[in-house]
Image (tube, rainbow, N blue to C red; front, side, top):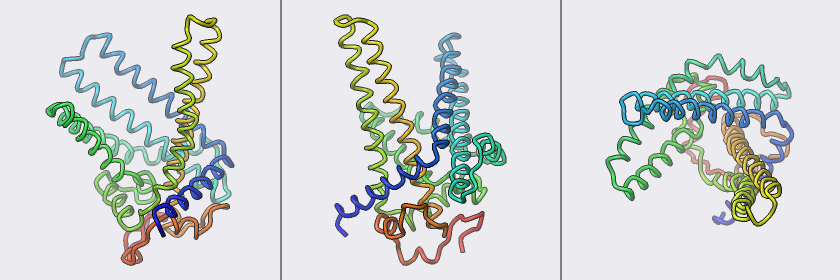
Amino acid sequence: MTMFEDLVSGWKLGAAIRKLVFKDKRLFIFPVLAGILIGAEAIAVFGSLFYFGYFTSPLAIALVFLYYIIVYFTSVYILVAMFVSFRGFMAKKPISFSAAMSKASSYKLLILEWAVFEGIVTMIIRAIEQRLGPIGSAIFGFGASLAMGLATAFAVPVIVDKKTGPISTIKESTAFIMHNFGKTFGGLIYSELYSLIFSGIGIILIIGAVFVLGSIPIAAAVAIGVVGFVLLAYGMILGYILSNIYRFVLYDYKNGAALPEGISKDMVDSSIRQRKSAARFRFGGSGGGTV
């Protein structure tokens, strides 16, 4: 298949994932909660830094490190709950939001370990960036973030199925990508573009509201800005859900689970590369190891 055909296949798969997501609208609760909590955590930590003037003290470093741990713990905890909820939906045994959050609590120690590990890695990356020039810092930061993003793409399902610590989780997630991950970017690009439509319009409206402020009634400018913020938030929520559910579907499919209604085997197989050596490996499922 050509690259264009691969992209089209991924696009179709992404469209099917979008339809799947809208069948279980409870999934939208998770990114909303994540946004609210992480926003509140950022205000609490950085508000404290500003209020007490700790910006240049060792305490500032400790608070920033604590902030990373709290944010990573919150985001992964909610993703684990969303994964649990999605699996319940797929098994036609839907569970409530509170039940999904409760089940996620059984992984809290593993999630905490992961949050501490990711916080340490982030602090190291930031420390290195500070010792580089502006261009070197930007290049290194982008490369490091991209590498971590790829290495941890399937960290949440690995934590749920394997119950592994941070290092083993990265190894499992990376191994899963190496043996199964190929041209799935088409679906991910679709998810991002679909959500970007809303986010982009939202940003344009927000900027437009600022520029026309004073030339039109304040109420009208505020209304335009509010609509812009709503569209921006909606786009971000969509991007969060679609990209994560896309990964969940791929992970479970490669571990022998049935595909959701509306998504065919050919649709998925045409969007991912399968190596012959991959047949020797089986990941996840319900806690099973590599055989």
